[in-house]
Length: 153
Image (cartoon, rainbow, N blue to C red; front, side, top):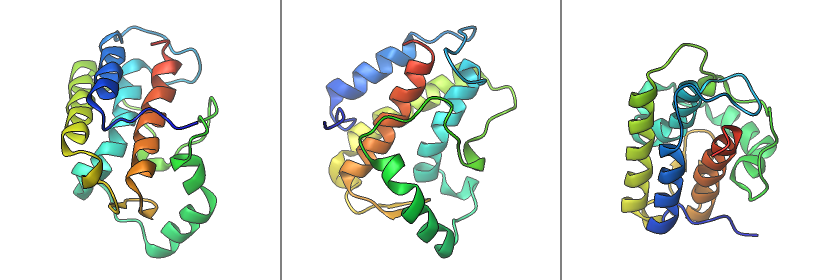
């Protein structure tokens, strides 16, 4: 079943409304990140796109391996399992500023929606190489939905 379209204003606004329900003191249903750390973790996907200089480029051989082993899990429609592993760049252990991370993720979601599906068709990702707009949609939406459900919103 297709995932909701994060490029659609109605869908992106609904995700933002869920983010607005988060509170800094909320406890996760599963996992160990607090709400601010979770938002910082979710921001990494967008930083890869909009602030790539923050991260080392993924070597071609590693991208090849990631495409073979993880791409379908990350960009497919099947939901992530609770307590799934994550890549080193996504591990957030330090305390984060809840409001700053919340504003940042909301701004990224709005930017992706404004840029539209066409801006992501054939765009290269940090970890997997070239993706379709649908794969970008699945990755963005599924990751946000997974972590918003983690906090019951």
